[in-house]
Length: 88
Image 1 (spheres, rainbow, N blue to C red):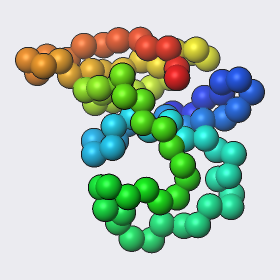
Image 2 (cartoon, helix red, strand yellow; image 1 turned 90 degrees about the vertical axis):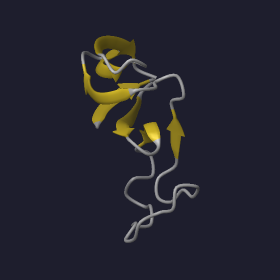
Image 3 (cartoon, rainbow, N blue to C red; image 1 turned 30 degrees about the horizontal axis):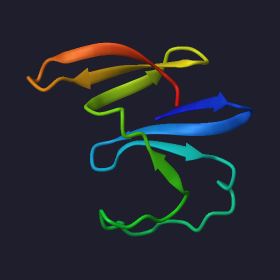
């Protein structure tokens, strides 16, 4: 999970094996209802998020600088690639 700013707003970007890459706005972080039980795959609860569909195969991520993330992406054949991607 990384924290970054874009367009004057703060975001969390989280790599999740079951939900993909999640871009989460921190705008309502102090007023959202807590999650105290697992949420089934087809449901959403807590802060709203956007799934970044183009970021597939990401095993790990970190912030490279204010505009880019650095990721370890797993290719179809299983090899690992180190890539920099613009923050969404």
